[in-house]
Image (cartoon, rainbow, N blue to C red; front, side):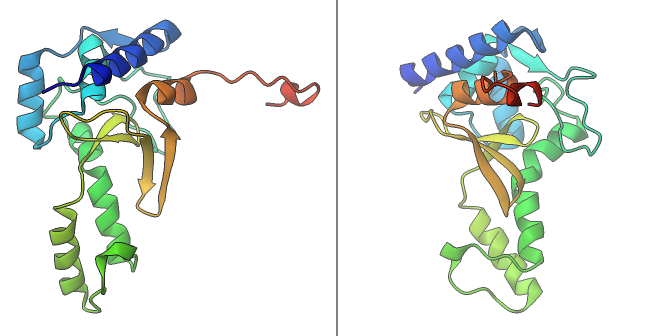
Length: 192
């Protein structure tokens, strides 16, 4: 069941994105498309994320979403389900977690870390199966999956050990990522 407050939050975020006029926004995803995407990737969108994408599908914009270090995939195009870029973006949170674990990181709540690499990786994969899935919003920005949920912070996940909150919720995230802040301090505003 979809939560009305979650839908409201997603629509609010979509309006903010549209008003910025920074990205091509295609018609929103249909219920049939959501079912296909969720079956393909094995997750359900949170209510705010679903409402955001139903209101309009932002797509990669040449020149705006490019990044010289490929630190950004831009907007995930949920209509290109066979795209390797989309698959990489969806897989990134767990892939980077496994990579960091392979190189010695071990989450504090996971009890003892096996010394043997094969056992460590097997245990990590088993434990990651119970970790909430993170769904790409834009580039390395993610929201947790989960029908009936909404209002979670948007996380920037570059590495397991390099993850930060990028917005208190989806609407706040749009402001943080895409609105140009106005510096008001004399002198310094010319250098920001």
